Image (tube, rainbow, N blue to C red):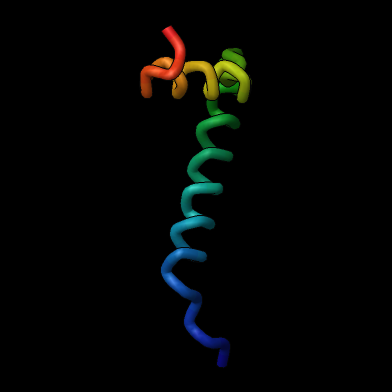
Length: 51
């Protein structure tokens, strides 16, 4: 029998599966997901690095 997976690994898999599902649904309804550069720009604006 396999050892139990650490909680961080299981949570990581769940997050990846949820992101994959969300991106798949966005593509299915015809919307393109936000590009990584836009994510980074938004996060920098939220934290106050950019104005």
